Length: 495
Image (cartoon, rainbow, N blue to C red; front, side):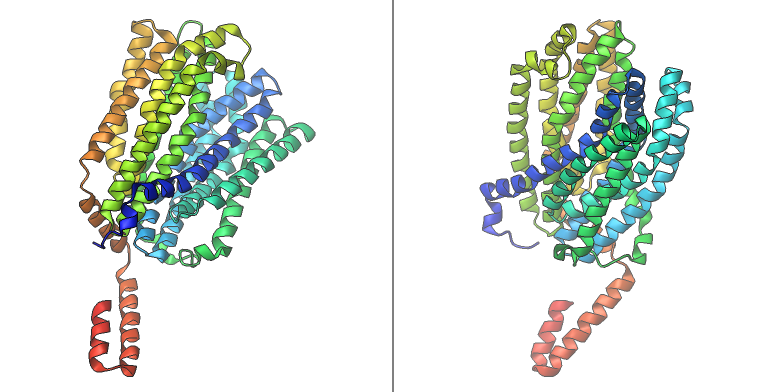
């Protein structure tokens, strides 16, 4: 292992590095998230049926496609981050191409599911009229699933190299473009909900195109992007071994929150329960962009340092991000509690809904606090490449504890909406404690060794032979001009 530089051991230095990454990442996450919300806001002015159809379609699209694409792309946190830390720059681009290929293929069955979404939703006993509208919306949205996967690959590729400002700026410009496009398609051309879906497609295409141009033209990407390579077609099984558990980590957690909405529809006065849950959920998601940004920063720092063979710096990065998450989570949770009587008015003027949501906010705040810590620890898990462990933890926390507890609190203890959040709070707390236990018992030297093996195992034997030949030739040419003993010394350093 390389010697640790004294300045890298400084906590203050590590805090600055992480905040420099986290702030643009938080803003970028928020900007990317609100694209779907903006389309729903435009649809909301078309009537209740259109709004209900678009909302159901968005939930279906996220559960069946976007979460899957996001999770699989997040495997690049490990692969690209460790390869970049190890200075295997060409391999960073190969990983990105491999992910683009796999996600493109996975998008095909997702597109087929979306094409028949209307029939699937009716089979799940959804209102036929709303299901038909949602199915139509999803058919127009099908190109978006292909574009979204490729967009996420570009985002992860750049983030792994600590290039976060272009992602944030591209996302910001895309939001402005999306508002204009939705206004044109929905209002001017009167395409209705189809126009809102097309707006999403165009915005994802625009954002991906901006990042693709940056990757190809920016000097900072010259080492990591050398054009398309046949090597992307090799090593796909190894990629899937990391991408599948990475997708499960994301999907298992997100599906649990989607199940809350379904369970709320089974409670007495479902309209009130679903309205309150929607307010709480949207508030939670917006606030969650902050720990998500910190989680990405943790993943970048840990993967880069492990790839570079600096396990103690990776350990320091983990400790620092845990402290930042604890402070930030506590602050945001206190804000939720203090402003609980006013937050509801941001979404509605109905007093009953506002009063009910204010009673749930303290539970939501506690849930957010635990979730903030687990989110950054999940970033550390991704940075280490331990997604398989994370997937099992999420399965146990939400489906053996969280959802069963939510059902018991809501329907047996008659706590209704409060019971749902109590159950999720139990699941999130168990999730956080398990990931914390795994993190505290991590052998960082072992993780650095695994990172080295992962990076150099991905390099084909043919490439290694080519590399060795080039280096040998370099040594020979140097030796022709220097003394024999100097030539021998230099060649021994290369080998």
